[in-house]
Image (tube, rainbow, N blue to C red; front, side, top):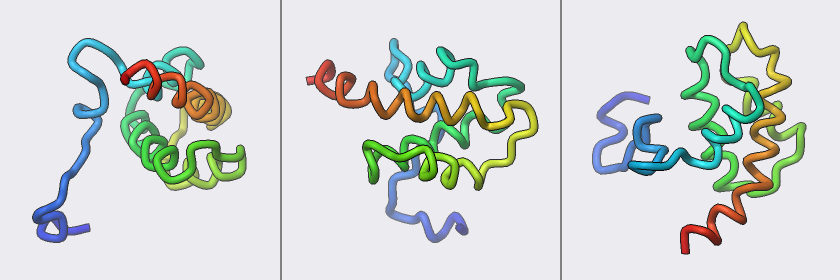
Length: 100
């Protein structure tokens, strides 16, 4: 996407995912499941996970793998990131209730 195509839209970057004093449940799941290695691909995985969970709150493993297939990662082998995304999906309803 060209920058001009984002004109008038909200753009979320990795810096905007966490609250000031608390990580997003997705970020916590990635840390808890050891789904971060060098960190190069981690921001993309977290942002893609956020988008996936917004449109599909309870994704299947196949949906998670399809989503992650667009992110090149040479360190994790994708096993732990898949586990982290599935854990974040399970934690998301509880996290939404806690924010109310």
